[in-house]
Length: 339
Image (tube, rainbow, N blue to C red):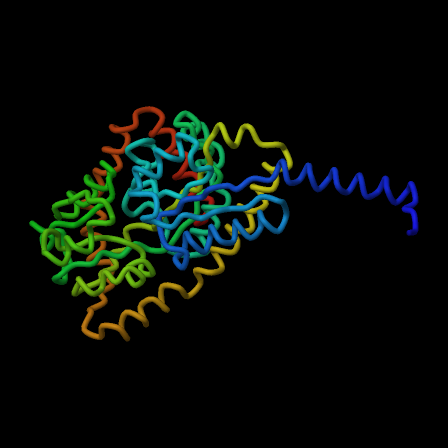
C-alpha cells in the first residue's frame, strides 16, 4: 500500500477540520411569511433562501401563511426567538409599533412604480428611523418592500364615500386602517385573514382590500362582484429578524444576510413587473362577470378629502416620534417624486 505523504496528510487534516467547523457552525434558520410560496412574499423568501444556501452551510426553512397560526401568533414566535426571520405588514405590526402605520395612511405613497421603488430603496425613514423602533420590540428591521397597489373588493360598485355607507369592509388589525375606512364612509371590520373568505361568503362583511395578485391567488374574486382602484395605497411588507439572534451572529453571517436581502429586494421588484395585469387577466378568465373599476381623479379627490384627517389621527396616536417619522417620510417622498 502506498503511504500518504506528510504534506497530503496535513492538507487532508486541514480540510477535515474546516468541514467539521462548517458543520458545527451551520444552522437551519426558520423564516415565516404571510403568504404562500408562490405569492410575492414567498418569491422574496425563496430568493433569500437561495442566496443564503448558495453562499454558506446554513439552511433556510420557510413557513407559509397558516402553518404557524395567524399573524399575531407568528409575530410572538419571532419575538420569542422560535423564528429567526419573519415578514409582516405594518397593518399587523401597527398594533405593536404604532409608527409603522405611517405606511397605511391613504394617498401618501406615489402610484408610479419607479418612484415607489426609489423610495423603498433610498428612504431614510426606513433605513435610519425605523430600526430603533423595531429593536425596542426585539426585532431587527432588515428591509421593507412594496407588494403592489391596494384594491378594494365589494359586492356593489361605489364612486363616493356616501356609496360605502353601512358597507362592512374587512381591515387588518390596525387602528389607523380603522380610521381610514371610517373616513371612506365604510364600517371597518378587523378580522384575521383566515376568516375573510368565509365572512364574505356568508355576507358577514361585504368587502376587503389587498393587492391584485393576492385577490387573484386567494380567489377573493369568487366572493366579490366588483374590484375597485381608488389609488389610496401600496401594500408594504417589513422583513425582520429576531434581535437577539441577529446580534449573536458573526460579521460574516450578517454580511451574508445583507447580501441575501439586497438580492431578494432587486429580484422581487423585477418579479412584480406586469404582475398586476397578469392577475387581472387570470381573474377575467376565471370569472368573466367580475367588474373592474378605476376611479377617475374627480372621484378620487372625494376620498382624498374625506380621509385628510387621518394624518392628524396618526400624529395623535404616535406623538412626537410619529410626527418626526411623518416629516421624514414626506421628505423622502419629495426626493422620490422630484416634486
